[in-house]
Length: 154
Image 1 (tube, rainbow, N blue to C red):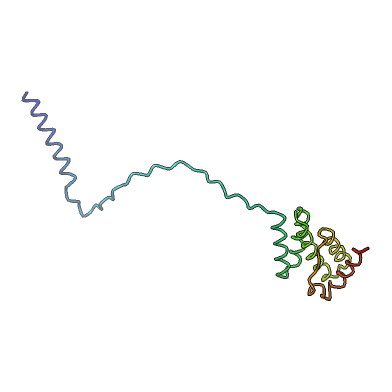
Image 2 (image 1 turned 90 degrees about the vertical axis):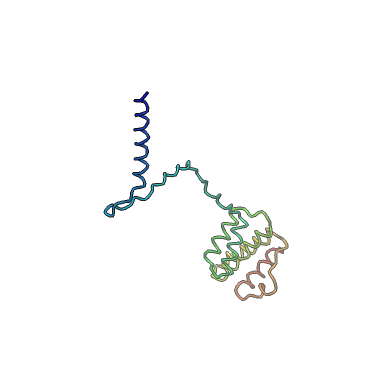
C-alpha cells in the first residue's frame, strides 16, 4: 500500500512540476511564441453559377439602333437597324420605324435607291406610316419620301 501511495505522490508532484513549468518566467533571450490558433475547417467548395446572359430581343436591338442614330453613330445605327429587321420585329410599327431610320441614313449617305426602298418597306409594313411634317420637309430625304408616297398610290 505504501508503494501505491508513493506512486500517487510522485504522480502528483510531476503534475505540479508541469503546471509550474507553464508559469515559469520566460528567458530574455528567447522570444515568446504566439499562441497558434487551430486552422479553420475548410468550407466545401460551392460552385456559383454566373448570372444569366441578358436576353437580346429584336426590339432591344431596334432601340439600340435608334439611340445610335440619335447619337450620330450612323454606321452602328445601320447595323443595329438591319439586325433588328433580320431578327424579326413583331410589330408592324417597329418594322416601319427601323425602315424609316434606315431611309434617313441611306438618303444622307447618297444611297437614293436604298432610301426609296426603305420608305416603301416602312409603308408596306405599316400602312399608317407617315413622317412628321418636320421630317417630311427635310431637304435630304423629304423629296425621296414624297416620291415613295406617289409609288404607293399606284
